[in-house]
Length: 182
Image (tube, rainbow, N blue to C red; front, top):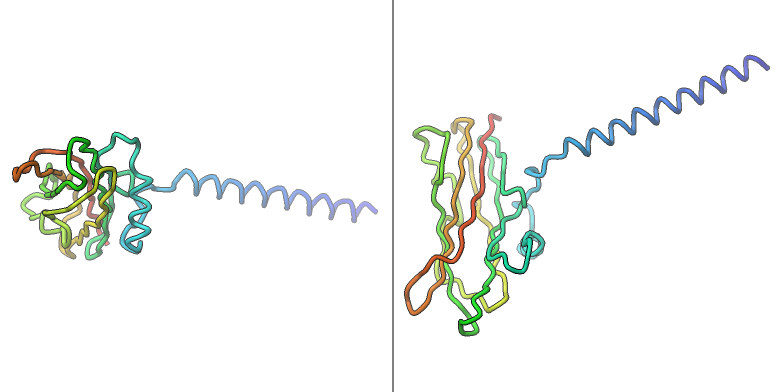
């Protein structure tokens, strides 16, 4: 009888230890989750538009970026993307307003590296028609060259709207890209 009791106690203690270890592993995984690992590249256009819709924090936001962290960590030789959303909040306009955006480098720790060339698709776009209250969503692709140094770049997206043939500042938004060694 003593032997059976010892075995039962040993099994119960073992199960409790396993449960504690599994719980710690799950909690650690949750704490270490990096929002910068939200990936845009594999999303379809519809999924990307849905995520951009969620990224707008309020009804007054004119632009948004997904991932919401506005930050990407990309390994050398790999490509990733952010999703940009522009919302038309121009009440005194006709049904449709024309927008444009252009990306410039705000700051960089990459030395002489031409980091604007890392944007492989979506550096700028003109003549974007957006109806009042609607959101235009697009992907901006970033390809880190294999020989790029590990560094960080802050890109500035200048969004403009056209009024009477003249483009005027509408909104600005920043995002950060960090290149990481493979």
